[in-house]
Length: 191
Image 1 (cartoon, helix red, strand yellow):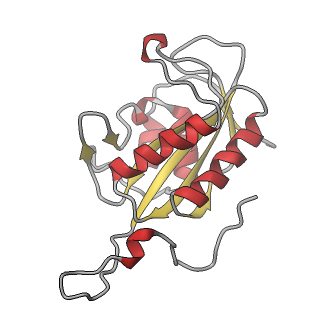
Image 2 (cartoon, helix red, strand yellow; image 1 turned 90 degrees about the vertical axis):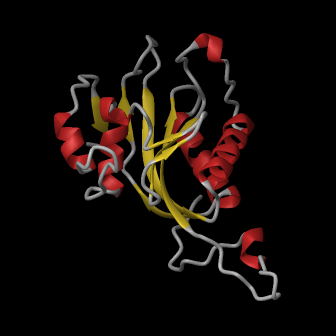
Image 3 (cartoon, one colour; image 1 turned 180 degrees about the vertical axis):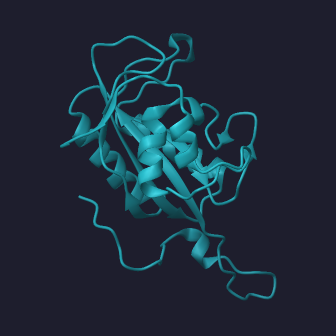
């Protein structure tokens, strides 16, 4: 079970980097917002296992959103999703983070097959936002390319980062949620 720490210390190999003079160099620390989703198996347990793995392999969890139930987006399935956003502090670069995310997904039973398109999954972890602004590479986009079209992502994101600003659109995530045309049902669990 994840317990939110009251400190900002991160244990990581990068904490021991030294420059050419042998002086310890402080690692670059980033804040990411990750979205967890699951619609197979014990969905709540899958979110918890993913969160625990994130703490062990990526960094400290600083804030958690409510858990939301939502309809599948982009494909048809009888199995609804549960989603949760979390703020993670890590010394990993976006590319290193993506590698760790894929390792965690695989360890929790996620099978990636691009020929299937969207499909049901035990766990899905997306990078929604980071403190570095806009990030684009061949295989990764931050903020997530489809974020503005997905109510299931925007609702938990606004829980943890309500005043966060989309670096390309220059609108808050709360404003983007109000403008989102997605009509799929998304509801906080327990409400």
